[in-house]
Amino acid sequence: MESLIYCIEKILHGPIHRLRLLFIMKKVDIEREKLILNRELLREKVEAIDKTEKVNDAFLEWLEEMEKVREEELSELEAAITDRSNWISPDTERILRLYNGLLDKMKILNSKCVFEAFSNPIPGLEYFSSRHFVCFESTKETSDQLMEAMQDDSIHIIGLYGKQGSGKTKLVEAVGKKAKYLNIFNEVVFATVSQNTNIVWRIQNQIADLLDLKIERHSEAARARTIYSKIESKGRVLVILDDVREKLELENIGIPITRRQQECTSMDCQREIPLHPLFEEEAWTLLKKYSGIDDESSSALLTVAQEVANECKGLPSTIKDVGSSLKGHPVEEWKAVLGSLRHSMARYQIFLSFRGDDTRYSFTGSLFDALCREGFKTFMDDGGLESGDQISLSLINAIEASRLSIVVLSENYASSSWCLEELVTILDCIKKKNQLVWPIFYKGDPSDIRHQKSSYGKAMAKHESRLVNDSEKVQRWRSALSEIAGLSGMHYNTGYEHKFIQTIVERAKNNRNRLYVQSTDMD
Image (cartoon, rainbow, N blue to C red; front, side, top):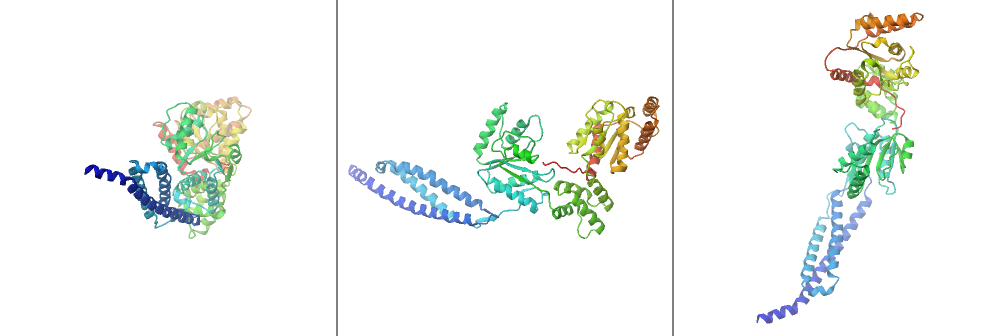
């Protein structure tokens, strides 16, 4: 009896399974048609949405899952049923399981094809930037050009250029975040280039860190291959290079921010985009934001403030610095800043006058380094040999082209005729150019300088004996020493020099509004 039943089951096994398989395949065909229809309807919606809106991430995930089911699962089924002899073999059960699995996935996908919000408004550029960023119409025009270029598959290198302080770094950081939000790129990497003896090495390290990549090889070529492989595995990657000043042999890097327009050309940029200064009304709006003034402020303050805004030449970073430093200050200080802004010759914020043998490699060298690290454009003589009593024309120009002179009055300052000539020129700039002058009484007594006693008395006596035929010059030097000693300065005798230096730096930071230097560089 058992053997008879076994024989009957064996006879019926093939037809029954074929019927079951055909039945399930029909159901899969129906669900597939629904899936394709849903996909086409959603794609039509995507094409119809406004450019100011972003497709919901849930739809993109649904579409990705749907394509995965279509491609991966179907290809496996097609391979399994290509040989129809399998339909009456034990593999029929496996095919049935595969179809049942596919049917369940398609049903789930079709049931999930309901989205509460198919698209969402794209936030403004401020959403992707720091709280200090303000996107004006002139900025938006540039950001739109960047977004358009990044979505052009024929463009791999974009150059952004503009004046120093025009806000390129903040803009491109925000645009990069927006591009990732819109799924234009899978990854966005930002690296600062700057001038460095190991530019390529520096870029590689920054990119590797941002990609969570450990670079163990030590040659540039090997490191480059490792980074290249990592970027390739990420799909579309935007690499933003900030402060590029010379040509870099990098392919498909995204957005290099170059120093001048001609350097965009040297980088073989396929698209060069300028960031123009703010319009006058935009500059005025930004100054009011940072300074705290409004239409209720006094008419005198508003008049001066409007002129200050115009003198900032539409550069957001300058407007921010000037506005923040003048917040809550009286109109007299606004007028002083306005005078400084109109001092168009200024190239340096700070000039350092010092006796090289005394402090070049100690106090003054450390002060110069600290000021530069805080971003101040500082002039320090490179140590050329002094010859004669007349200082070089380049030094005179540097003094006259500075907003502030810091005079380090060390023990042997007066023994140098160059230092004394510098001092005469510096004090003259107080009257002619409204220059700030800060004397630093370094391990000395101001009264010794004022009355030319101790080392200052000995130095001046030597000058008198040497310049018997030019007593007027010596008298100018004596008058300059007396005048500088009478100015309000800072004193150092003992203690930690680095703390005293930091005090000077903080004072400079508090006077940044008076130290503005107008830049003509394209950055």
